[in-house]
Amino acid sequence: MSKAQILLADDDRVIRVTMAKNLRQHDFDVLEASSGREAVDIGCDMKPDLAILDFQMPDISGVEAAEELREKAEVSCIFLSAYSDDEFVAKAAEVGALGYLVKPIDVEHVLPTIESAMQRAAEIRQLKQTESQLNTALQQGRETSIAIGILMARYNISSEQAFEMLRSESRNQRKKVALIASELVKSVDNVNKFTGDMFDRSNVKPS
Image 1 (cartoon, rainbow, N blue to C red):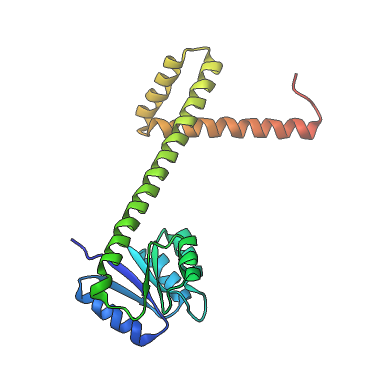
Image 2 (image 1 turned 90 degrees about the vertical axis):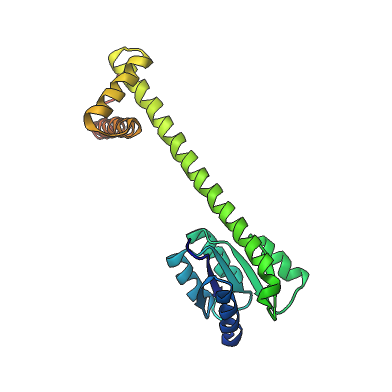
């Protein structure tokens, strides 16, 4: 089983190196970044299981880095800070942080927070994957229904006969029914656009 991967970003080298060493001793694979921008670049490339980001960094803040990592790579984060105040907690919650750690860090004591955040991050990724799969299925289902309607109107046949035509073509081309339906809908759309443009240019209106 592969190790869980953590991206650790802190511009303070002593804190970063010490914490990274301790995390590795607890069997984590640790990626290190010395700035917010470097954290985003590494995170988007490697897509770690979790990012631990210093709240204040010299180029872009931990908040900005967290937002980019979430939007571009679907990487969740927790924050590091030297302070624990209401403003910090509010900002962390605002960008969807899964927790926060107050320096100085004792990895032994914060392991439950890190492990809980990693579990929650995995759940979020699974939910997003499921949502994406559902949206794809809905889109494919919509296009299949449209294709069936096109065939019914074109050949004056029942929905069952139209679906059988799609399924037969699917077998002939060795493609999924949804793909055949999508190609049919796209072809009809292209014909409609082409003929519509022709009528517009010729100033002739279809009867």
